[in-house]
Length: 268
Image (cartoon, rainbow, N blue to C red; front, side):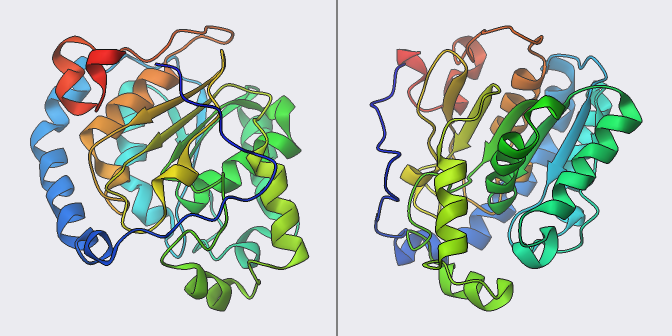
């Protein structure tokens, strides 16, 4: 299940997703909402139970904690202490501070309130920020899980980079952004899991992959970018990864009844 080494030294310029994938994002995401509603009972019954440790969930670009409500409710049902990010809409530096200081402070609040290391689950831009947190405050972080997060490549390998510049007030080719990209592209010092879909209509899926190692893993799912937070395969994978004990290097098992949900399961 090893993945070919990825070039992390320079931001990779890959073509954004096709117009077809972009235009079908909404209907595909709606379908994922429907499949989540039908399968939630089975997910709760089969997913590994949580140990009660804190999980900070970060929303995607232009969304707020409302978008992660289903994911957080699912994690709480399993026994985790799921937390909102409390920073309003994710507008990049306008939300987290120019150096991410507001988000670092939020992580410290959760860490101090619980007395435990915090797992980070970030959707899209939220996952990019989760990796930044793991670099800035590794002593507070247990692991990082990203959902369709383009941390390994050029911001222009996306269909929304111009909108990001406008809403965030930050140029993607600017020195500040490029410095952040170099920082988050490097593998974090904590365990990390990158969940991605080749059906992503917002960002190039190749930029959402991690360099695999004993502590870093990629998990491919079927689905859209906008539906990742409610995709049953994603929810199960997140629960499985969170259930690992500190220091445990157990790989994600795609076999058996789960094989239909994860591409390449037969080679796992």
